[in-house]
Length: 210
Ligand SMILES: C[S@@+](CC[C@H](N)C(=O)[O-])C[C@H]1O[C@@H](n2cnc3c(N)ncnc32)[C@H](O)[C@@H]1O
Image (tube, rainbow, N blue to C red; front, side):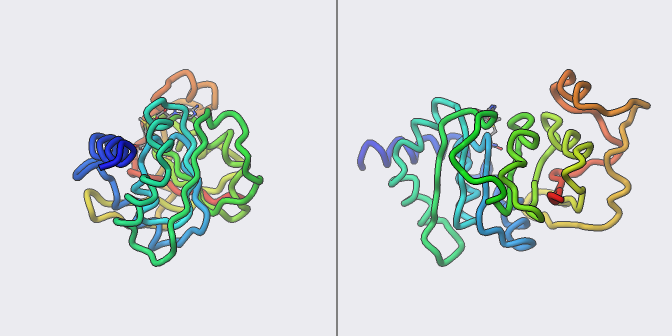
C-alpha cells in the first residue's frame, strides 16, 4: 500500500469509520434536494458527504485535514469505492479558515453544511445561491445564529435518529423558542459558545437563502 493510501485510510477510519460515519443525514438531504455543488466549511475529513454528493468543497484549517487532502488522488479513490451516484466524484479542499474568503464565486453553491464547527453561516452564506440551502446543527450555536439572520428563511428540520432520518417541513413554529426568557442576539450566541437551549430541538435545521 502506498504511503498516501495508508495515511488516508488510517485517518478516515479513525475519525469516520463504521459507527462514526453519520451518513444518514447526508442521505436524507440528498433524497430531499439533490444539490449539485456542496460546500462543507469545517468539514475536517468528513468525506462521507462525498459518498452522497458528487461535488463537495471542504474548507478546514486543521493540520490532519491538510495532511489527508494532500493525498487528494487517494482520497478520491476512497470516495469512488463508497459513492452512491454514477458521476465521477469532484472534491476540492481549502486548508484555511472559512472566515477568510476562498477562491469560489459568490452564490455558486446549492447546499452549505455546518456541523460542529463554529459560526459558519455568517462568513459563508455569500457562497450560497439564492434559494440554496444551509443545513446546520446547533452544537456551537450556528443554527441559532441562522434563525436570527434576515438573509435566511427557516424551512425545515431533519428528524429522527440513527439511520432513520428524514426532512420535515411542517410545524416549524415550534422551533427556536428559548427555554429561558431571553432575547437572542449574535453577541449572546457568540458569548455562550454552545448556543442557547430551545424548548424543541432537531438534529439538523434547514434554511433557504432569500
Ligand atoms: C469538531 S470538528 C467537526 C468536523 C465535521 N464537521 C464533523 O461534523 O465531523 C470541527 C472542525 O472545524 C474546523 N474549524 C473550526 N473553526 C474553523 C475555521 N475558522 N476555519 C476552518 N475550519 C475550522 C476544525 O479544524 C475542525 O476540523
